[in-house]
Image: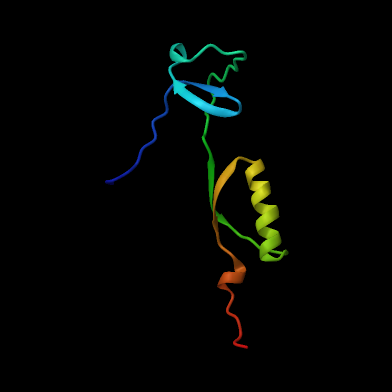
Length: 94
């Protein structure tokens, strides 16, 4: 295989200020913190990508987009690929 993008797993710390990541660095290079969370042995993912979702199953496309993307965001999904039944179902000419 050629041209792969490999993600390296490494030990690091994350500094957060006002709910925003401001630094990712070795622990000893992080700024002083008011609160520290021990995440030893845990993985931190910046986002999750769901490449196969269906919108509009049982709902209108608009309703599905609102409710299902909101639910996905609550679970940490930040990017979706939509496979929509309304876009793939042949329509009769009017």
